[in-house]
Image 1 (cartoon, one colour):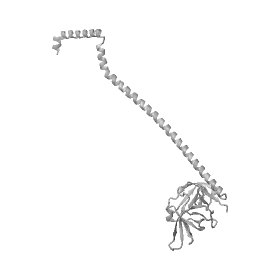
Image 2: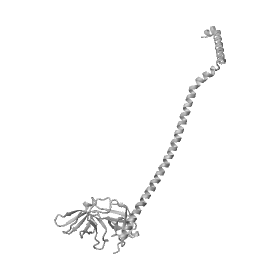
Image 3: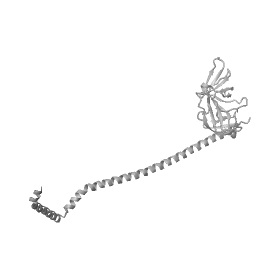
Image 4: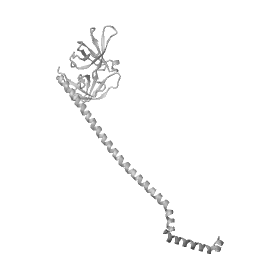
Length: 276
């Protein structure tokens, strides 16, 4: 290799000089700088890559900014929806309360001798052997054991059997331990309303000790009789569903469907005085 440069060094210098001359002449004639152009060619890929990285970064930044902005908008909308739902629920509760009070006003006009205390159902029995409710009104609110409990329409739900200062246990008319006098006005028939273990599961009760001449039909209205003076007379209990003959072939009883929605009752009224 050293011999090559030593033997051809002159030729290489001449070739280099000619190349430099050609480049200088081309630059003057054609108006471009070969060295600069070569640098431009070499730099182009790096510039493209830099531009791509810049565009990618800018896109990700804008996307993240838009995501945060959209998330904030969604959160604001969710808060607004929650507010509207609360307002709607409050409006519905107010409407239902107005309806209850309107119904109670009608009941008070119909039965002015009765005195009421409003209450809310806070617990229900879950036993197959009993049917009772717990309400948030007790002796401090004028409620006592033996008071009848009705819904807003005057339909009998049950009787208070235990009363604490701030709550009371209500045994419903479906419970097998509860008995009270019943009457079918159309047939002029008095009997005993009582719960039954089997019928309780069907949401029904019995009207027992009917006379042999009892001529009841489906749909007959059953009310409290008031006999004995323990409970007020004329409280709506339900309607006759079916009439049966006992196994002795003589005694009769009827299944009664309650007028009150005992399973779904949320607000009730306790009759604390019935003017007797």
